[in-house]
Length: 230
Ligand SMILES: [Fe+2]
Ligand SMILES: [Fe+2]
Image 1 (cartoon, rainbow, N blue to C red):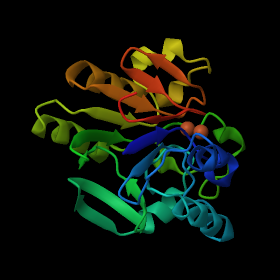
Image 2 (tube, protein in one colour; image 1 turned 90 degrees about the vertical axis):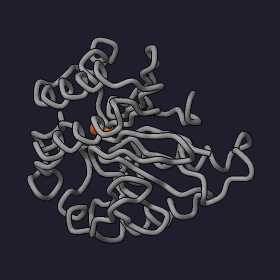
Image 3 (cartoon, protein in one colour; image 1 turned 180 degrees about the vertical axis):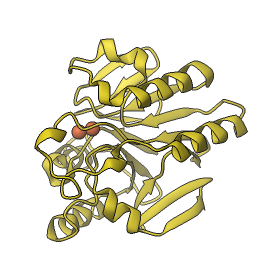
Image 4 (spheres, rainbow, N blue to C red; image 1 turned 45 degrees about the vertical axis):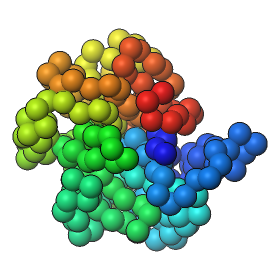
């Protein structure tokens, strides 16, 4: 079984996940073969210290494993220090622990028989009060090699995947989202728009906008935690 959820921002917004797996409506029979996928701004690596250890400990205590794509609020310095595992279910990952795994940008994974294209990253609209290399990293926005890798992998898959997982949204979705769009992200939104127009997919899930919105095949997640396909 695979579930998806929006941003967790480390311990700040972890409660929705813990409630989901321990509340009266909690799914039963969940094992570490099942996955919860966090759609960026996960905060798995942030302070490099006690906060990270506590957050990772609480994620590991969940009945399933945790997979995540990066958002804009991640410590990209710490992430970049982690060794890359090639060809984990078809794509590149950083294994933070055995049950907390970062799905890198521009990859295609096969999980439970479904294919997923992943493309994290986003622009911090609160960048003005953040400190470079302390609470903000330029790698929040993808670089050309990542854009290129994504295109190549999609071409290799015949421009067809089952699901697309991103942090921010393709350009066509912006009018349906309530936050003021930022021009800082336009390159990424246009890239994702090109993906949306050229790739056939069943459903596209994203986070970043801190709201729960469904629009056709696109679903923005924030408080909602949904099973794959919903
Ligand atoms: Fe966020
Ligand atoms: Fe974000």
